[in-house]
Image (cartoon, rainbow, N blue to C red; front, side, top):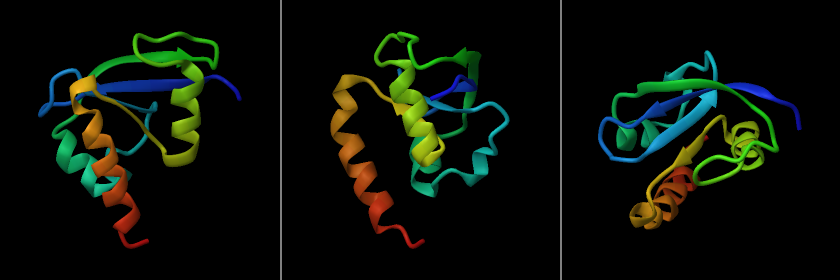
Length: 96
């Protein structure tokens, strides 16, 4: 896994909720369910992320794997972890 330039956005709807995407990624190409739940993205920072980078709640490897697989990594506070399951179910039901 290589390093990537990543942009981190803060949710306008949910405290302590962040979405990591490749820098320059078109926000409108992300799943509707994610964009609706997340609200207007507020740019927090850009960073050069490597797999061995340790982040506050995850690792660079986890973020990069998620971005490779689904174009984003969603970080949410622990109290909202149940929402992740609900969100993943919505994605599965989404027409391709």
